[in-house]
Amino acid sequence: MKPAVTVLALSGGVGGAKLALGLSRRVSSGELAVLVNTGDDFTHLGLRVCPDLDTVLYTLGGVVHPAQGWGRADESFGFMDELRRQGGPDWFLLGDRDLVLHVERTRRLAEGERLTQIMSDLASRFGVASRVLPMSDAPISTLLETDAGALEFQHYFVRLRAVPIVQRLHYAGASQARPPDEVLDLLRSRSLEAVILCPSNPYLSIDPILAVPGLRVALRAARVPIIAVSPLIGGRAVKGPTSKIMQELGIEATSVSIARHYSGLIDGLLIDETDDTRETREALEAMGIRVGVTPTLMKTLDDRERVAQRALDLASELATVSTHTRSAG
Ligand code: FO1
Image 1 (cartoon, rainbow, N blue to C red):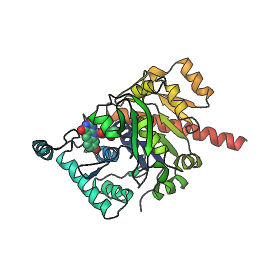
Image 2 (image 1 turned 30 degrees about the horizontal axis):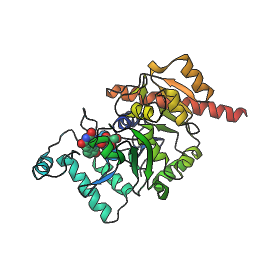
Image 3 (image 1 turned 45 degrees about the vertical axis):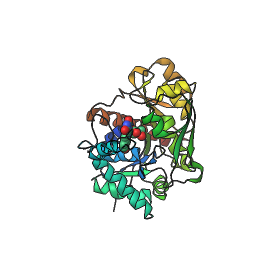
Image 4 (image 1 turned 135 degrees about the vertical axis):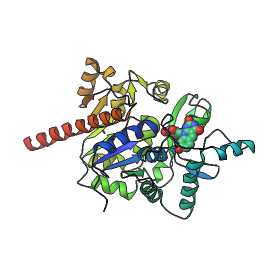
C-alpha cells in the first residue's frame, strides 16, 4: 500500500518542480503529492504533450535537464533534425527520449486510459515515490488574449517567446472538467497536513488549477494550512513572464499583490528576504496572512530543501495557532 499523503503541492513547470523536489526530500517517502497544471498541454504533431506534468516527473525522477529545468538531461535530437530537414514545425523542441513519453501517453489516452493513471504508472517507472497528479483528466487549455490575437499557451510562451501583451486569460474546458477522484480523496483524508502553492506563475500555472470546479472549495474544506511561496524576488520573477504579465494586467508586481491574488485561499505567504519591508509585513498581516521570510532563490538542492522546510515550518506554525485558537475558543 502507498503511504498516506501529508503534503499537497500545487505546481506549474520549472520553478514549481524545484520546490516539489525540495518538499519530496523533507517529507517521508511517498507522503508528497504534486497537483500539476495541465493548462499548458497541447496536441502537437498529433501527440499529447503535457509539459508541466513531465517537468515535475523528470525533476522528481532525477532525469531533468539541469540548466533548462525541462526536458531530459541525457537527450538526443535525431527526430528534431529530421523533422526540420523535412520542413516540419520545429519551434517546439522534442528530444528523442522525451518523444517516447508523448507517443506512449498519446497511445494510452487513445485506448481510454485516464491521464491520472498514466502519470501514476510513469511515476513508478521513473522511480518517483511522490504522486504526480494532473489537475483534471479532461483537457483544459490556457488561452491568452493578446495584442497578437488569441493564443494557446505554448504558442504564446515558446513560439512567440512571451512577447505579445496579455490582455485576458481563459482556461478553456475548465467549466466542464472536474478534479480526479484521487485528488478529492486525498483532500478529504485526515492524513493531509499542509497545502503548498509553489512559486509558479499565479496566472499561467496556479489559476488554471484553481479554475477546475470544486477544487478551491475542496482545498479550503481540507482545513489544513495553505501556504503560498511568492514567485517574486524584489518585484521580479526568477524566470518566466510573471512580472511582465502582472504589469500588462495593471497589477503591481509585489508580494502584497500575490497575497491579494490568493486572498480567501491562503493562510501564509513565504516571501524573499529582499521583499521583507515593514509596509509589506503590515499589509500582509492586515489581510490576516502570516508571513515567512527566507531567501527564495532555488539554485542548489540545498536551497530547494531550505525553502521547502521553511514553507512546511510556516504551515506547522499556523496549524499550532489554529489548534490553540480552536481549543481556547
Ligand atoms: N520550452 C521552451 O522554451 N522551448 C521549447 O522548445 C520547449 C519544448 C518543450 C518540450 C517538452 C516539454 O515538456 C517542455 C518544453 N518546454 C519548452 C518547456 C515548456 O514550454 C514550459 O516550461 C512550460 O510549459 C511552462 O511551465
